[in-house]
Image (tube, rainbow, N blue to C red; front, side, top):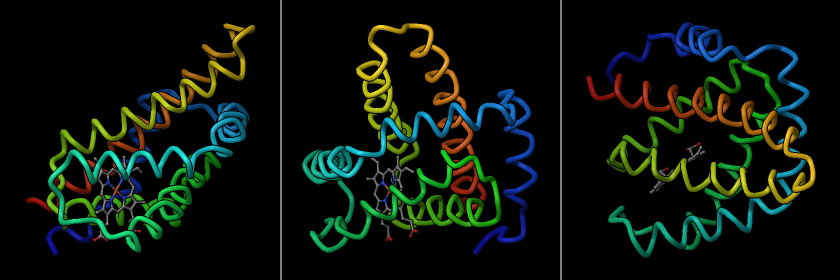
Length: 162
Ligand code: HEM
């Protein structure tokens, strides 16, 4: 496996700094998680259904989807817990490596992220429909977190390809 030794940690530190994620954003991140988590499994069921219907990947079995939904929820939980620990780093690494292994095109991976991100934005909007400033502040933190996560997974992907 190429470049196994590179540091997700160093990349992560740069990225967190660049998007200005402040420690106080952890409170907002926890709030976002409370809003999105209840229906996330249902959303991901639809997500994998769409993938099975529209994307050429090695056929996803029912058993695989059953395993992937909780795996993905766990990954999101780590991100929104704002705990950028080795546990999270390892999870990012697994995500990048898994998608590289199945030869998922980066553009489809990014598109998949967008679907999930829009679902999250919809939930925030529905929750705070009467308080636009809350929608705005939660959305800013959501976007930062998503960009960090997606960027790191793609970096793993890219280094795997070197
Ligand atoms: C169109 C987009 C996507 C497709 C087709 C796809 C497909 C897959 C497949 C087939 C696997 C299993 C690979 C294996 O173990 O052999 C996998 C693993 C995984 N995917 Fe995706 N995925 C997509 C997007 C995403 C996104 C946006 C996330 C968000 C974080 C994600 C999170 C994960 C996680 C957490 C795993 C399990 C990694 C592990 O611990 O082994 N996937 N994906």
